[in-house]
Image 1: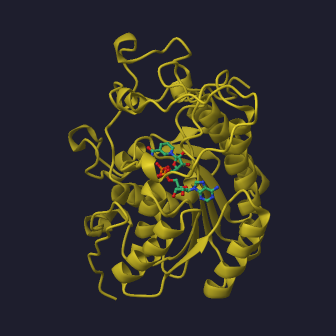
Image 2: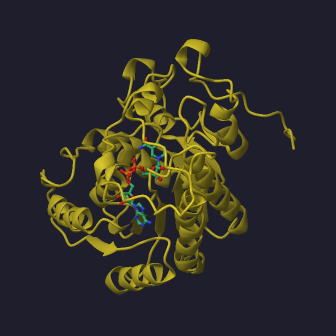
Length: 352
Ligand SMILES: NC(=O)c1ccc[n+]([C@@H]2O[C@H](COP(=O)([O-])OP(=O)(O)OC[C@H]3O[C@@H](n4cnc5c(N)ncnc54)[C@H](O)[C@@H]3O)[C@@H](O)[C@H]2O)c1
């Protein structure tokens, strides 16, 4: 079916065109017959993933709290692809009944789920520990820990039965944030989910299900005005710190940071990673490295190494360490000369 450029007044999107990736294994039918669930799929990163997967032939179930954006996502994806390939299910990933409903609707419409992209997060849960209500940490763990576990329990058993599956998590490159950025509550939640998905890779080893973390690392268009509200602090909790929009700017200006990548391109990185899931099982991958491996002209073509290799693949240890090695003393570009290259692979046997 011919693809169509679709615009939206609600979603912040541009037309998708992955045709020039055909020689990297990304074709318009490379995911035909597969069904994917994308949590948080009605905005930015998840929306980019959902659109790219559908573009490549998959059916996609978008599970998101945001109903207006979710309904629009369903319309856009169906129109873009000229087929009834997208289902939006209003879902709060922290609620078991919502996950049950998501699974029931996904199975009723598409029969099975092969790919689970755990991507939902409330990006506002991003304060420092000492000045945030404990409730924020609970909410962060509820989305990232409990939400990811419930989704895996709903979909992975079917994948094992059929001998094929891919489970990913939209991780972060920070497992604790440098002082300049704050975000203890956010990174603690992200670390919990990363641990779950990496450990699941071991649980399902040899069963045809591959699990890895794909770290978006600067996929924009982030829109803070559309994020879900923060949980109510309890009486006596300290006042919640105000979100500092300059923080994002400072992070974006760090050396080695490749610049914001359009979500449509991020989706291409996800499709590429899914196609290479067996090589990524139990590890993490930065999206910019997915681009380099694809020789994709984002974000800085002149610096991309030639060839189609997974040479920048990060082990779980490296992924945790890659930015954290900078330590709490890291406080911005002026104090850190270089940020870009992942550390060398640990020696055989490794530190553990
Ligand atoms: N954008 C980046 O550069 C970047 C970098 C590193 C990691 N990530 C991770 O990628 C993911 C997506 O990031 P983004 O920039 O697209 O964020 P976003 O805020 O634009 O999108 C998150 C989506 O999750 C949904 N959501 C929030 N809470 C939910 C819940 N309880 N149940 C269901 N849906 C819920 C929101 O409605 C929204 O649509 C997040 O997990 C984030 O931590 C993003």
